[in-house]
Amino acid sequence: SDSASTACDASTCLAERGSGLYRPSASASAAALPAATTLHLPDTRAFWAAAAERVPAAARYDARRVEAAARGLEGSLLVAPHDRVEWFLALGELMAIGDEATRRHADALALLPRPAPMPVAYIAQRIDTDDPLWGWQVRHAASGQLQGFVTLTRFTTWSADFAWDSSSRESGMPSARLSNARLRSGEPYGVDPLSHTTSGEGLAEVARARGVDVAELVNLNKDLYPGINSRSKLLDGTRIQLADPAVADLDADCSRKDTPRTVAARTRLPLDDLLAINAARFSGGLEADTPLDGKPLLLRDRESEVDLPIRGVERAGGAEPPPPMPKGKKKAGKAGKAGRGEAAEPAGLRQLDEDCSLTALLAQQERRGDPTKDGVQWTRIAEVGLLASLGGGGTLVRYALQRLKAEGHYHFAVCQATLAAVGFYERIGFRRVGARARYAENREGEWTGYRHWAEADERTVAEFGDTSYLMALDLREWSAGPALELPVADEYPAVAADAKAPDLRRMSYEGGTLAYESGDGVVVSLVPVADGPPGSEPELRMDVTYEIESILSHRGTGRKLEYLVRWVKWPNPTWEPWTHLVGSDDALRDYAARSGTVVTWQRSHHKQKE
Image (cartoon, rainbow, N blue to C red; front, top):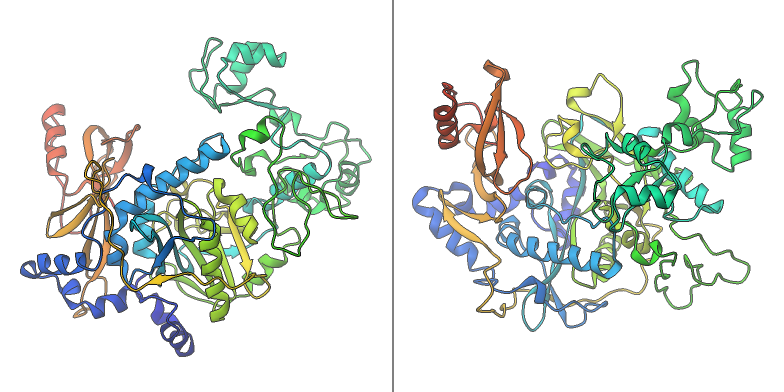
């Protein structure tokens, strides 16, 4: 994807390269650093020594003791890394501050379930794949310690087929709009009569408190939690099913004369969304006035619902405090006082593309490219790629968006939000939108909800988790507020060292390059890769390697041979194709010696697991 900028027209290229806002793409950076692209063995140490001189020599401090940034970033300064090399050299700091930001956020809001921090492989692959890549690091003006960071890029899709779509069930949007409708009808936020979220009690205690037979609870939850029994002790935040949703979520008051239109009017739920979640249940088709003949409609689509972390104060029956509003503006807070003549919005209401108008605008935007090569680039849509902050995150994102709006090239900004950050982006002005995709292995099959990418090659849908929580903002209509003027330094400030703390850089020189060792079995290095035409110089690309603890078993033969691999500091072993283990000589020989298996493989046409 590093040559993606060559796909844009001449006017776009000039606008991006001449503005000063955009950082060079990897191809441009490589051209400016011939030593980096050639990387002859005698030159390698010299290259990395020169690269390291551009950033502070070390980052020896404890992220837990870093001072939080002020809301307006007073006392902090911004640094704009020049290329991927500088982002790579800061990878250890990015990981430490990202983990700490997640911990502080969860503690401050007493979130359950506790959100997980971004994994190192994801951060590394975004830095590697996003093109163009630009952004800022926030550093304490006095200590130089990292307090936050944001990266931006052009929105690019890699799936075989992709469509902006907020109407289909696969997008998750009908389910989200139904949830909002139920909240507007008076359903309490964070309370599900069909489930119970534990806070220290065992399954038998849950059964007594909710008046349900414990044997029935075991039966309802055995697929969710294999091995559960009447004596099970449950971790805080475990969600226990109290009834079968397949039965309880059906319209209990359905009559033979009902149609979807009459059900929507009676339940005060949006008709189009009821049709979307029920279409597959009616083989003969389902329209607004289709007679139901007593067959009840599903009123809730739990499979497509998103479990957002809930604040402790909300679990206790309180409400989220309203966000601060700009002076001179009035808006009803979630639990605050409404303006005169206005009704307060119910707690938990999500900001959605309710009428699908924003999604329709996104679908009209220009795009070009090949998903099997450089990806499909949406030339007028920017994406917030990575974001973490120990305070001042709202100011940082607003600053970045104001720059985009002032530049005028990008018309929209999107993000693929972690669930713990949804409220944060909503306060800035983002709304949830929908998209669906067909991936390479499933191109002839059904569409599915668009998955947040974790690799540039999205051939296996199962590897990408649940449908992405896509959020979008129309920069042309966005009320940016007063212009933010933040100090941007030309050079990195010196980092105050703590002699008792380890160096967060965690860099070591091995295999002809610097490598970052995460400490949990993941090693990231920046290596030259010759992906271009014959005679072209190689480009620097991230190489992510997972450390093998041992090989446990194997299955299949020939091209279908797979190994069961236990990874260092990862809880569950995984089945991997033999091509992922090429180069793992010691582990393969050890397994062969223990199992009596003869292991053979070809080296020439396969790569290690990345």
